[in-house]
Image (cartoon, rainbow, N blue to C red; front, top):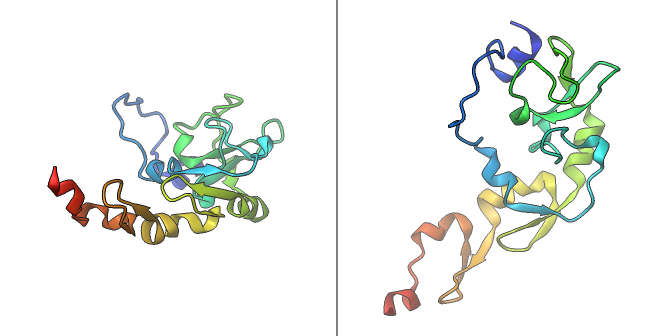
Length: 156
């Protein structure tokens, strides 16, 4: 098994693409914040044009002719989506200093408008995000939204 398959559990990378494949579990989190700062193009994923989320999901096509960053979730085969070369063992984790850049960028939660460093966002999303009920205007944790019983909504 080559290094790409080992890092991503993708087997050989030659499996047929499934057009009905489900989104990655992190996509919901990744789509729930907005960057407050301009992203550095040369550090973005060459497929989705964003910083890999979380930062540990970033990889580097480590050959001098390419040296592009990408998200593990955007990598669908052993072929580099940018330069089209087979990656084989020429892939590595994103260097720590780049992960630090990814984590220090400021993001705004799309649900509660709080701004924070991206490294703290996942914890915020799962535990600390306060949203307001559009009917009774009570504030509650986003994860408790399914158990919120709104007295104003019951009147209708």
